Length: 339
Ligand SMILES: NC(=O)c1ccc[n+]([C@@H]2O[C@H](COP(=O)([O-])OP(=O)(O)OC[C@H]3O[C@@H](n4cnc5c(N)ncnc54)[C@H](O)[C@@H]3O)[C@@H](O)[C@H]2O)c1
Image (spheres, rainbow, N blue to C red):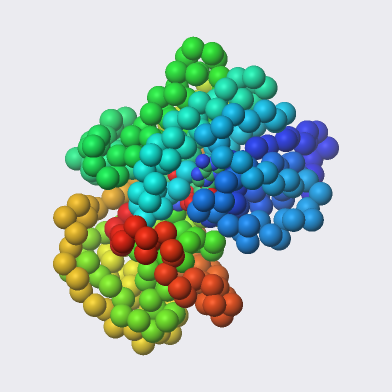
């Protein structure tokens, strides 16, 4: 039920037709806000927001944030940016433009309408980290000229812009560094380990394990992540972040594959392939700051989150969506598993 003093906010979500953005919008609408979703549908899909088409407090605008936007809003969540390597390396110049010009445009808008603004940053700003787990105070280790730099450096520059707009123009900013997230509405063929394993298991294909499968990853369920966003956005102007949001529980690739096989009831077998050169052994968020400042930590157990994600992919396959290779991936000739 809506609280008597609740003032309805008008909220802009860029990248709202994507995986995380569409879940955020569901939560904002549930709590009574008005939402404007801005997306150029590069990696997002209208099917993620189709269920909202007749919602009286929801609006969709097809727009590329590399171009200025003038709308009246109280808050901005800036999520627009392709997130998986296959997608962000497809057009790397556009990826950097989205992060950098997109941030400038959204910060300009926030300044003009005096809106609080949230940036979806990433654990990739830590690059290939030399310390584990990574606290927010770690400055990172990023190759400026490698194929991942369009994303990593774009997101790093966006953080710089957010903090300069705060220092120079007094903007009320919130920066979240997001670690691996999974859940329904992920892209079925984006080359990430959770979607790869589930799609392979559901189609009875061998599950590809790079190396011996003892390398670990941590995965945060999307509902937990969105809860972190809302809590961060509700903190006072004296806490801009950056704050890590992710799940510190680590699983080996073998453990993940076995859980997926068990939950899907698949008879897929594990197939080992050579480990790619840049495959990190371990990646794990230090979430002490989020616990302390936001009272936040992930609540969803891996098997519970995997169950919901499997249900979603199963439904996609029944409708025969996602069984084909993503044309972006085929065009780019790329396949990634690790992050
Ligand atoms: N999913 C994760 O594990 C993860 C991890 C770290 C950071 N993030 C960040 O969270 C945000 C959302 O990620 P996601 O997983 O939902 O990815 P996604 O690809 O599903 O969503 C990104 C959305 O942004 C849109 N978009 C891309 N470029 C745009 C542009 N120039 N103008 C307007 N819209 C544009 C896409 O069409 C898509 O709908 C991204 O900024 C990403 O970098 C995600």
